[in-house]
Length: 187
Image (tube, rainbow, N blue to C red; front, side):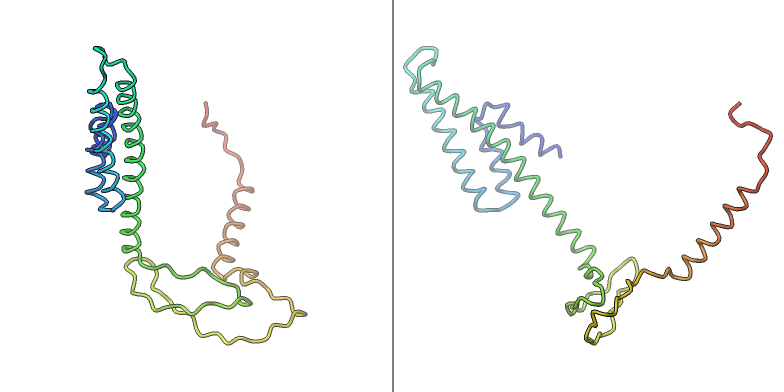
């Protein structure tokens, strides 16, 4: 994080003249051809900006060459700062997503109702934590009769949920019938 901040501020603090340093770091980290090309472009723009400032004939470099060189250098610095932050963040997010995909493995397909066909599942590697992977039993496709409404699988609660619900109802009834206390905990 510290390096990201340092290399993001480098083009701004140097008025764009050291913007190529941020691009060099980005190209070394991502190893993408696009970033190497942008490194060369930023280096060329830095040389062009310095050359334009040096070619200004006025004593205080207030001519069009000096203004164009300074403006181009500052604009290049801000553009590279923004590009560096976006590309660096995307690179590390993609890297962490790859790590988490390797860590958690492939996820199974979500539940599909019985009237929708399921894609055959590929064999998966055993997973570390959690429930073991269960392969569904092969399903035979039977013709669906539109006159028979299908009952969703969650229409009847499992016995454990029914038991917990009954215990909670019993506890609620006991609490309602309990006489109130004389003590007031607020006072």
